[in-house]
Each structure stands twice: as C-alpha cells, then as structure tokens.
Length: 373
Ligand code: PLP
Image (tube, rainbow, N blue to C red; front, side, top):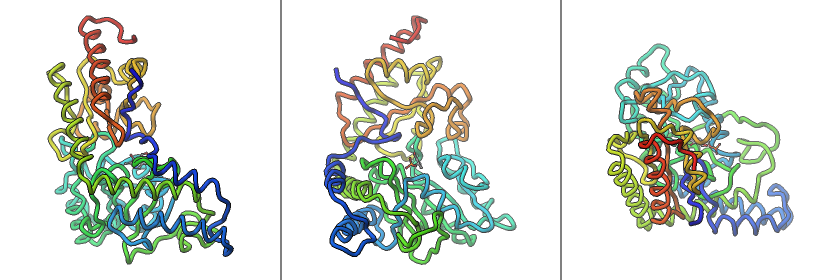
C-alpha cells in the first residue's frame, strides 16, 4: 500500500493547477514593477492571482495584500490595534504571540464563549481589535465570526478573522462575515508554502509591517514572489471551483464521518474533540485513553500514514495543545489527541489505510505491547 497523507491542516499537497501556474511563472523573467513587457507580464500574473484570491472571500482585488503567508498576515493585521487586542483562546500562535492579547475562553465544544467576549469588550478601556478565527486548525471547529463581529463593532472595535484553515473548505463572504481584516495562507488550500494574503475591509487603513518600495499599494514593500503568488491564485481558483461544485465538500465530510464512526466502533472510549460543534468537513481530532499521540504519530508514520498531533503548524513541539486545554481537556487528553485532516486528493483508500494501521496500534495497547511496528 502506498503512503497516505492525512495532514492537510499542516499543509496540503500542491494542486496540479498551482504547479502548472508556478512552473510557467518560473520559466519567465520579469519584475512586476518594471514597465517593459517582461515586467508587465509578471504584473499580469499577480493581478490575475489577486482576482482569484479576492473571489475566494467575496472581496474585490484592491482589498488583497499579498504576504509571505498566514503568519505575516496575522502579524500585520494585529498592528492595527492601538488600545488592545481581544482574541479567542483557540487562536493560532501567530495571533496569540503577535501582540499583547487578552483572551476570550472557549466553551467545552471549542466554540468561543460570546458572552465572555461581550463582557471583555465592555472593559474600560476596551480593546479596539477582536481576533476570532473562522475555523480552528486542530479541531476544525467553526467559530461564530459574524456574531463576534457584531459584538466587536458595537463595542467600537474592528474584527480580524484568521480564515487560514477555513478558506477553500467553507464558502466565505467577507461582507456577511462582518470582518474588517481576513488572513489567508496559500499552502493550506493547495497552493505553495510561503504565500498568503491579508484582505482589508474597504475603509481599513493599515500601518505596513515591511517598509521600502511601493509594492502592494505601499502596504507591503518588497519585490513580489511572482511564482508563489501565481500558484496561490491558481489554487484559490481551483478551491473555489470545488467549493461551488459542493460535491467535494460532501465527499470529504462523508469520508471524515466514516473515519470517526469506525474509530468509535473500535474504541468506544475514544474522545472526539469539538464533535458537538459545527466543524470543517475535513478535520477529525480525537484521542483514546492510554494511546499517546506522539507515539501514535510515529507508529502510524512507520505504517505509511501521516497525521498530526497537537498543533502541527509548529510540529516538533511537545507541549499539549493550548486549544484543547482551553476547551477544558485534561493534560492527559490533550497529550492523546491526534488530528486527521483530509483534502482535495484524499480518498476512501486513505481512510482504510489509517484505520488498519490505527487498529493495529489499538490492539497493541490492549495487549500492552510496545506500539512501534
Ligand atoms: N493560522 C492558522 C489557523 C494556521 O493553521 C496556520 C498554520 O500554519 C497559520 C495561521 C500560519 O500560516 P502560515 O503557515 O502560512 O504562516
């Protein structure tokens, strides 16, 4: 059996459309700021990508600032705050560590506690920026961003939404979401690593993080990474096409639900994190008492199945997931949680591969044998 890659929330395989666009861009020369034909062709690729990325979130191209990824977009967004930042406790580290952030707690199902958020917005002086992600990278739990935006606006704050994990998996309309800033990352939706975007609301003015040349309408200096941006655009277009066809989303949800059903049948004591809340169709986060996630990730890797444990964005980190702890999971439960995340190239054979390898680990635990195969 070949390898099964089930770690899309860490990074998704490059979509063929993105590979093609990048290969074509790499074969050409041209600085997008140059006025000659070479430069104009590079500029055209960037503007074409800008249209595709804007369409993914229901924005217009002028709202899109290309960045080096989701981390940069989040860091840039948080710079808008002057008085204070209020974030959900489940945010990615690139939000939680980008500034002094006060935290709104999560409910046990992983959804941000809106009553608590409203209460914290009432503080004096209140925050002027609220950051709530659209979907969590570890649990896939979808957050009530539109409601959070209403509360933020009523309290005189702007709303930033990290939509890095949601983009391409959920339909996003910036206006209905009520978000003033949205962060995206190319590699989570089948584009290249090292490209992302910050989408600005029409009236939002931002201090640049990088100063220098006049690129990105003076909002982000530095010669554009044309090939990566072209790949991002192609991936965004393909992801939107898949979303609009709806079939792929339903298929992913069916695969994920089937996986969870089999897990619960084999291990009735399995804990499914966030399963009571609305979730992305591609993510399953669960643990079984006595099966340490770290050991499981290694044992499954030896069996040719790649999954994540805790926050795979900072893989190698041993600390238990702050997201699961914020949901009230014990240290032990957090250390047992694995994340299986699917995407555009996943199929039933990957689920079967995972289940057969995972079942072997489960049986070894029952027999109290070491897990490594
Ligand atoms: N936000 C979330 C929710 C993520 O899962 C990630 C993952 O890495 C990031 C931000 C950071 O994005 P990037 O890897 O493009 O810096």
